[in-house]
Image (cartoon, rainbow, N blue to C red; front, side):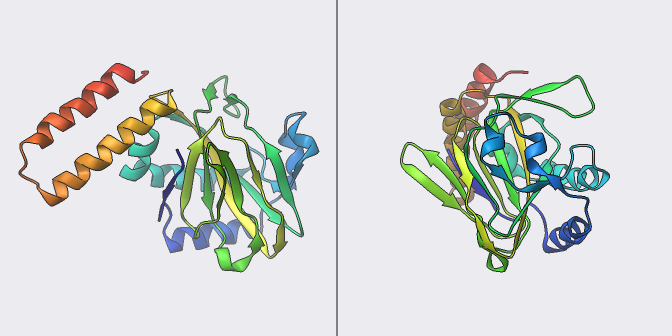
Length: 226
């Protein structure tokens, strides 16, 4: 299931992020890649402990806490502090898959990567290429969103970033451990929640709303990790 969430960051927040990233201390992205990814990764990345990354990551985490769309789609148990990357001058990231377990920098904690997330920071018209290309059962899906918009997709997905042939592509990326590990169960809950919200908007007094909400919460209670 691939889900886009518009407007996670406001235009003002995006402008503040890009201004700080323009002056950041970028390093070779291959320094943080696994042994298979090093052969296909060509970008710049901020270190996990970089103060700019920490500060901007906190801004994103605070925005996510206010997003009911993010909560409904991800059902987050743990969210890895966001990281930041930069692509320019034909840089790209070839076909790869994210590791199943990620450490939380500076701690002894680890996180299971049920969901991967990319938050686009550069305006799409400011660069050519740079699509996030995700493989699913229906083939490849290319994603290039407006600045401030987020895409969520299963951590099990093989994906790549197409070469950036003009301009600069800035993005935040991170992983989520969901309360509901199974992607099919998570999809059912997401679709049920969306249907309940549509019904509540169209027929707010319908008696079935309480029953459907009960089904949703009982399924979540049965499937959720704590």
